[in-house]
Length: 114
Length: 111
Image (tube, rainbow over all chains, first blue to last red):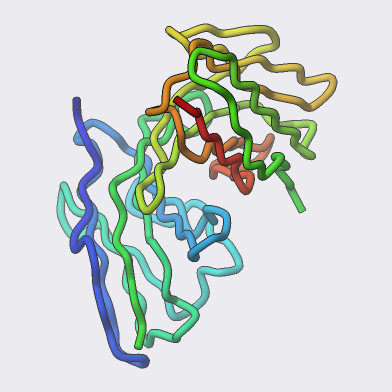
C-alpha cells in the first residue's frame, strides 16, 4: 500500500538554528499538509498546500515557517529560527481530494530543540 | 473556534467486548468525519471515514454519524488487546480543508 514517507525520523537542533523536515507524499496525491503534535497534546494543523501554493495556514504557521515542493516528489517544511516550543512531532499528510478524501499520515519527525 | 470534543478516558474493556468511543463537534457545517488510531509515539492511522448520517461498517469497526446532534461515534466489536491505543476523532469543517482533531480517547483492552 502506498505510504507517506518522512525524513529524518528524529532531528535534534540547537535553538535558533534552521531545520528542514522532508516528506514524500503518496505519488498520485495532490493535496499536502503539515500537522504537529506537542507531547501529550492534540494534533494541530499547520498548513495545507495545493497546486504549488499554500491553501490555508493556521496561526501557528508564522513567518518562521515555510513550505516548498522543490521537485515532483518532495514536500518540505522549514523552520527558520527554531524555538524551544517548536519541539514536537511533525506529521506530513497527503490526500487526493479536499473533503471527502481521507488524509494519510507519514510516520512523523520528532523535532527536539535544545 | 471549531472544537472537537472527546472523552479522554482511559476507557478499559475486556477482550471480546464492544468498545464505544464518542465525539462531538461544534461546526454545524462539518462535512467529513474520520477516526484515526494512534499508538504511543506513532502517527495517526486512518480507521474509518464517514460522510453521511447513519452507520458505516468495516470489519469489526462501525462508525455512526448524527449531524443533527453533531455527534459521531466508533464501535469496536470483539475488542482485542492490539486495539489498545488512543482513538482520535477528526473533522473537516464546512469551509475548511484541514482536519480538526479531538484530544483522543485512550482505550485499553484487557486480556
